[in-house]
Amino acid sequence: MRNEITPKQVMNGAALFSLEEFLLDLFSEVKTSISKDDLESKSKKMQDSEYKKTVNEVFRFVSEICFKAAINSQDLRLVLERKESDESEVIRKTLISHKQHIALLRAHLLRQVRAGLDNGLTKRQASKQVIAQNKGILIDFFRKSAKKFPE
Image (tube, rainbow, N blue to C red; front, top):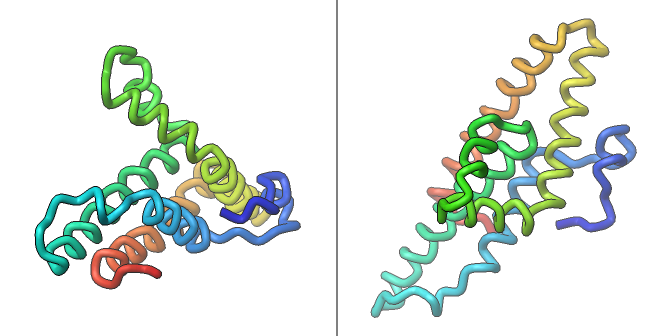
């Protein structure tokens, strides 16, 4: 994570922070947080395969939580309201440990919406445009990460 960039800088365009950069930063952080030694596979080849699968699954989970938090998702709030849930505890810990990622992503998305508004779109149109643009980037990144492990 590039600590020198602030959400305010991203919002006002003083610092560039793309969705691709967010995904690569997040993937790198997830990858370094998971040790191959924690996996129980016997063979090296099996361990590498299991490691890649685990990293991709954790990355997808963390990125989904970050996106839901960045857009203030109602379904994320509902899960968090279940105080006794193990799931809500994992999500809370994820939100805490990725606070900076979430803030930068929110700023990036809001900047894109503001650009749409500046171009004469309604808030709804601008939001739909941002969703469409970013959905393609996300799907492409997930496909690539499943095939070729980002370094």
